[in-house]
Length: 418
Image (cartoon, rainbow, N blue to C red):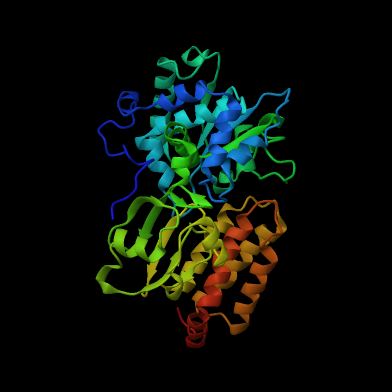
């Protein structure tokens, strides 16, 4: 079965990143339509569509927009989170590099809906090519009257600015991102207050993911009912799945939410090379609890994956075959999160450090069976106890690896060598 492309429909066209190519495929027609609607009608359409955030949490986008105080005397901001730093996730990069105007049109429509006149696109520092494409697209949008004063003679004004981060994973967290734009250390803020009340520069702010915003023009053009007809009743629309690891055809696949994980791996990914068996799968980026080989017959949507003890997250699906050492996987994860912790919270700062230390000792043949229970206890102490979810993102996959592959750990410890 072919992909059901909505967002990725034009990424393979020549010069797809230019405004000329975008306009020739109907680009900015949704903006014209939206500007003929009341802002509240635009928000209602997004709510009715059932669009859930594509950045990881899966929170309904239209409901999030409604959190903006209607009588705010302060400026309202919208920030597009293009800080794609989750290991295993590479879906946003394609939009940024090959179809940035789709995202920009979504941003403009969202700003109109929430009555914002200033938008920021925050891009990861390691994406210079994507930053170049976005800056070019912003300039083209200004030249054609889609940004600036009195957009399309509607009376609506909007300015947009690209902000390039410095490479910190933690700035993918929405309040860490806001701190970075303000010129501060990228440290997440305690919540409440939430950004919709006190966000950028102390003003009401909405932070949306690249893929989320790219969905908006299609909802306006085709209707909320059309979008809601794709996927499942509570998980509507398509999702871009980033398939990597031990598969014959790694890459991006846009499919309805609810696609079966085994079908994604076998039919679209072409299965595992060399006829080897699947050992584990990370279904939603590095922060998601892993599934073992007997847990893969599952619908890939936010609710079903969460009910199974993991999360859909960014839908960065990493397949690991039987040759993989799950001990090294856990150690690599601990190393990454230790490096990327901002250090604010003791549970995260110390927990990631101790997890990496203990897992390294286990890998080097210096561990004991007791170490495994210490790892699980540390994971338990880290989860749900910090300002942001980085500690959870470290604890969840490591906890699942130790529990589901404990025999491998114990056998390795008994052998006493790496």
